[in-house]
Length: 293
Image (tube, rainbow, N blue to C red; front, top):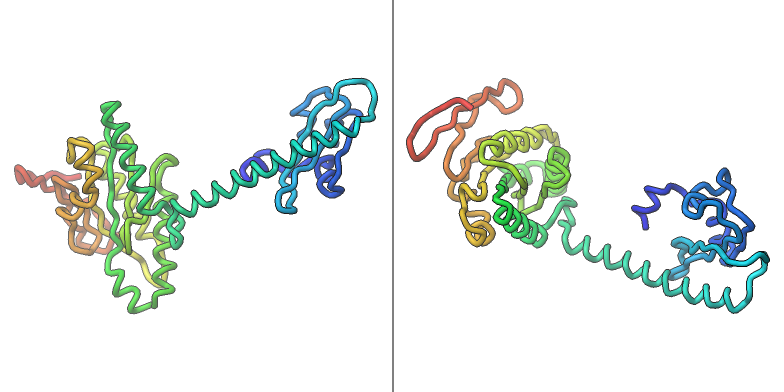
């Protein structure tokens, strides 16, 4: 209901009137200047019946329909029937809204507002199936906030909670609409990037780490990142979904704004991230070849 209200805007005066009066109204016609939304829904309508919708004493909308016939009067039995119908509609809408709220709470991390572990695992499995079916790729980036325990000890747990929330929102803002940012646990975040290849994953992970560095809660926050791309680093759905942390754990760098993936390592910059940062070189583990990014 809130999403629909955001699209349509505030209700027309006729709807506000029936909600205020808690009673059915019959209008001869709809004035496009006074009630533009209703006129768009029922263009050139006449003898319009407006019935309010109430659930738990709260007005949530109205049922609007065109009444056949020429008289402006409406039979009592029709009003009664419309009232019963509206009660069922209001209850159904209320239950649907409550179900949506419960589902949102079940899939959202309460501290950061991003997806929780449950939604992360479901989304990862779905994206891996999609990538396997369409011969596509999907990248998983694990982002670990550096020295978070020391941050908590220095600035307090309340500042730590605020920092985690700020980091999560920074990751969400830098991601695409169809990417998924989730809190994996503690100070670790998981970012699912559908359609992101191994080559593209380096730049994507760098953008994520740069977004974290721009978070300033008491001090600048840095993060380390691990990358795993399907099907390059995991050629089966079971391997990817069954152990999403394995590539990150195997290649996880020491804290200090380093970046690694399943097959390659990015050497950390010599100077502080974000000031005089120079793109590091990449050392491929199998052949030992070093090349600039």
